[in-house]
Amino acid sequence: MFKEILLPLDFEHENLSAQVVESALRLCHPEGRIHLLYVNPSRVHHAAAPFYSKELLEKQDEAIRAQLDEFMQTHIPDEHRGRLEVRHGVVYDTILARAKKLAVNLIIMPASRPGAETYLLGSNSSKVVRHADCAVLVVR
Image (cartoon, helix red, strand yellow):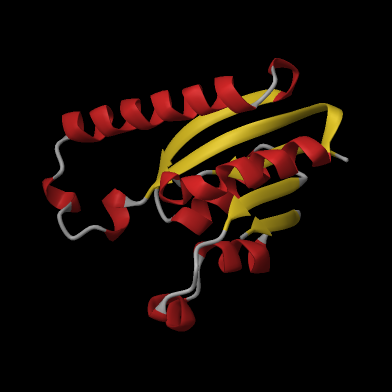
């Protein structure tokens, strides 16, 4: 059983959310907490990033935070609710940094189907698996 679980969510893989939460609830210690994290890579990986206004990014963050909050309220029982965070940066680096900061015992994340780019560069989940200081469960 794990006391601190991090769920880095990507709403592009919403079809896997139920499996990610189910796994977290099964593996969560009775006194454990489940933390939700969304990493917005738009400032780092998007060609138009220099042209994003601060207001646009704030509105985007608010919308994502509202989605995460609804997800938390709907799927995570009160006794297991941990932190809810929206961060900006490189996805795998941010996941690893937050896991370390929160002293996470387990990261559970969805996996995307590999495309040509992941064979060359590697996916976020594979980088988290290789570099995490804790256990990682990748749900497909």
